[in-house]
Amino acid sequence: MVSKKNLILVPDHVYVPKHEIMSKKEAEEILVKFNCKLTELPLIFVTDPAIVGLGVKPGDMIKITRKSSTAGKSLYYRYVVEV
Image (cartoon, rainbow, N blue to C red; front, side, top):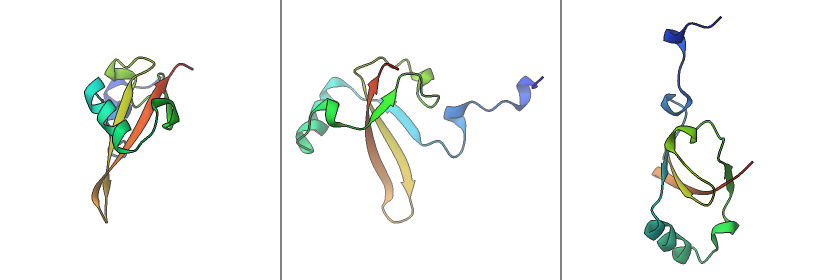
């Protein structure tokens, strides 16, 4: 049996980058900027441990912010889908 005090939530782990739900307006701006459709983005499942606590639903767009040694930070976008 695992003690609750030793559990680390996945989104709080040091190696998990920041995930956030984008507003519809932000998502549209990104799609126009990159000249793509929402369904052309890489996919992320609604059950992914990194986003399960955010209250995402299929059809949402997620922005992932990662630290980068060369760029400072880098942004990635994912389209949320059902399993």
